[in-house]
Image (cartoon, rainbow, N blue to C red; front, side):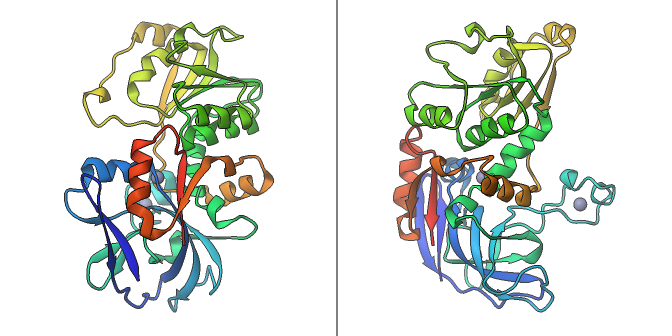
Amino acid sequence: MKAAYVKAPFQFQIREVELPEPGPNDVLLSIKASGICGTDLHIARTEARDWQPFGHEIVGLVEKIGSNVGNVSLGDKVVVESGSFCGKCADCRNGRVDLCHDRTPNVFSRVESDGFAMGFAEKIIVDSQNVVPFEGVSFQEASLVEPMGVALDLSYTVKPELNDDVLVVGLGPIGLMATQIAKAMGARHVFAANHSRSKIRIDVARQLGVDDVIEVDKTPISSYKFPRGGVDKALVTAPPYVIPEVLGVMNYGGVVGFIGIDYGEGRFITFDANTFHFNKLQLRASHAVPALYFPACLDMIKSGAVNVKPLITDTFTLEDIERMMKRAEKEKDRVIKAVMIG
Ligand SMILES: [Zn+2]
Ligand SMILES: [Zn+2]
């Protein structure tokens, strides 16, 4: 089978590799859809010092199963959890699988010749614990389930409630799904903040029911006239530097959820801890590892609570991975989610 490999900066190879026979707990999938994530772009930019496989937003059809596999059958459509939990550690046994530190099993698939393969390939072997079967959702839409699990983890971290005014910062795929989840959880108003140059992200946000988009290069979040003066909950899907400004627009008792990374000096921020204290604010981190909530995410796509179709701006085939990765990097404001079709 063919599998794609990446080496920084933005070098790609498609290799012919052999998959071994699946082990007793393994499932062999033919990959039907696979999304490009911001993490893949980061890997291509600087992270991959040597050739490595990539792609972790995977949907497939079950082609072979090991002798112990009981949760799926041949021909089933499945979404692949990008990382699971061990089920053995103290956190798992205390009912907090979300806190498990043991990231196995994950989505690295052993291949005979070249070590591993991942989501940008024709096939993959994964542990049966990582596959969630589904019906009634297209392969392309199902490829958004993995990042939707991230948006849902962020939302559970903050728990928007009935009649809350909510601010979502950053209109990437996570932000665009978080706005819809906040509405579904009962928010009164959902505001979004994004740079004005990404017209398509702003248009999609409005189409998906955001009440207003703050174009931060024209109106800083701190000077926007929120109907309640500020917001009750904020979901930040942007680099850390925005946190102090967001803390400044929180209503009394407000809660800020954060998912965002800066690999440079921007990781360090300062904010007014006195305001934080006297306004009884909270700042909470979301990190959706292990990958959870896939059945709920599939249900939300089916019910229409979260519409992922407008997020898929580009589709491509494995042969085109290099062109698509480079375009996703150069045209960030035009590409929301690019999905490989297998
Ligand atoms: Zn991802
Ligand atoms: Zn564990």
